[in-house]
Length: 219
Image (cartoon, rainbow, N blue to C red):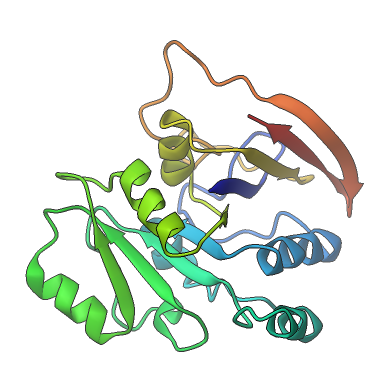
């Protein structure tokens, strides 16, 4: 599986404010770039924090891109994947609608009634890991289900977990002209943080978009 992480952050490296509310960081040109990346992917993944904060659809916006996917024999929208170690996904989340297949990744500690509720809401549940989602195992199961390119859109906890397990192949970061600040505001890679064996990607590209810049890193 090829894992592509995409994120937009402020000049000071924040994904949103300390209230974890969605903030517009990029502009229309970057939105179009992200939409194309979604259209090129087999699935789009987020952590449950993103679901609770933004309630995203994770679908392709451009109808021409959806039509192009259908023409090549793919579903109009990529599958949606939610990592939820804390069983917080609401049954009325937008990602559980019928516009695309949705996978919910949970730990083996997830209560059976929660799993049943999510399956009734339309999710395909994959459980792995004792008390938190085992990303290596669940991504391998997704690959076995035909997902070859996985796009990850955050948040910081999920991105850190993927980096910790050396599962990331490409990282695209849009840096927008905004300073957010706050010691408790989420960053690109939250979690415990590295104290040694720091990941060291190679810079593969730089592109100016809107009033910011996109950095492309390869691992």
